[in-house]
Amino acid sequence: MTNNSFLKGLSVKEILILLAVLVSGTVFVLFIRYDERNREREKAMQVACSIEISLPRTALNSLPENPEELKTLNFNELKNTLRQVIAINDKARFAYLYVERNNKLYFLVDSEPESSPDYSPPGQEFTEADQLDRMPFRTGQSQITKPVTDRWGTWVSVEVPVKDESGKTIAVFGMDYDAQSWKHRILNETTESFLIVLFILFLIVAYMRNIRKSKAQQKEASRREIAEQQIRERESDYRLLFELNPQPMLVYDLESMKILAVNQAALDKYGYSEAEFLEMSITDLKASDEFIHLWRNLIENCDSLQRREIWNHQLKNGSTIQVEVHSHNFDFRHKMPDSSCLSILPKI
Image (cartoon, rainbow, N blue to C red; front, side, top):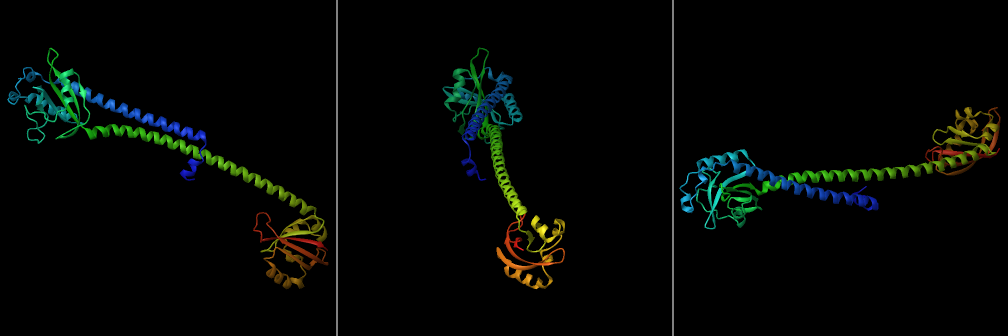
């Protein structure tokens, strides 16, 4: 059964079930995507906040207001801490601190070695900064940015304000995550959910197909049972007509010439028992002088569905009688129609 024929053959109830599964599955996948996105953001935020708390603040307590003076400061302790942060957190690419001066943002320190092309020295202006990167200085709240593209790539940034004892934001700690990898982690979890939904849908469709196949098989079995019952009834009728026919009747195989069945009239007329008849062939009834004529007649008329012949038959007691034989090809007990022959002997 093709998919098209399967879908065309669906009942309203089955269509509603599939639609319900599709809608529920879609809602489930979207929920998992939303939940995984929030969990990924929550984990990243927790990591960034815990790092911000552990940052050494000695070099941050008295930062100059002049951006040029930032270039003269030593942030070795902070730099070593940030490098360790990136070494431990393999999902993050960069860790850094920046400050705001004269409505511009400047790097204090980052996790890159000085030999790296991605290194940002103290006092370097954060020219790729977005207005969103200034928000921690305005709100004092941590945030996760939308994907932003700069000269280093496309990143999702977690930004946590660093505050002094008075609660004023003096710097912002940032961690950059590759936006593509971030999306892939969310997509992986969503894909698993999607595959689960597909598997459930596959099971339901397979179940429906099996139910339909089972119903079709039951219908076919019922049809066959009815047909077989009709055949049995016809065979019973034919058998009754065969048995009660007052004229002798024999059934024999056209290939082997073996007698397959006889009626009571034949038993009475020929003198043989049914067991004896079933051990005989049709040639056993012929007089010896008619064998050549018998085989010639069979060869010439084997394809004929109906034949009328005059023969001399020999009874069990040895006497010979002349009979007029009417033969008809037919299907006897599921043999091919041309491999069995019913002989009717009405005039003896």
